[in-house]
Length: 135
Image (cartoon, rainbow, N blue to C red; front, side):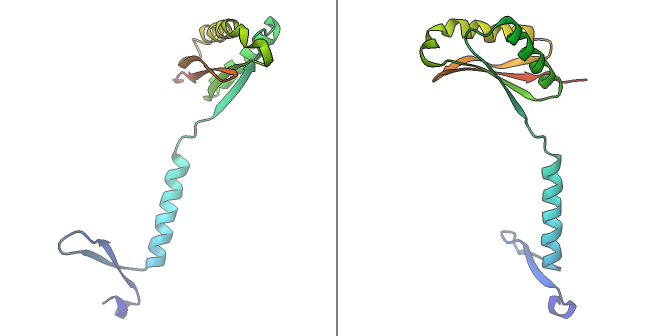
């Protein structure tokens, strides 16, 4: 039947008893499937992560400036990765770095919630903040 129509016989479900087959144009079928996959992929939400970097002894003005950027990122719906980078011997100030990140988390409470508390990884202390859902 497929040869008479100039189409292809495609096995849809080989494990079924009896196996399910369909008479279709296989190239058109592949094209439609690719088109459907592309549409599904475009509808998927993409997670954007913005980073803000501090030093252990970041000045108050710099802190406020970076906090303003953090608020903008969270309002735009991006996740925020705030980290304190310790250079050389400044690792002895890790308490200051943790205090700085916790202060940031507290001040950004109305814009986002802390996803991961400050954690030291090598020479960086990292904290993630996810944006709150906008209604």
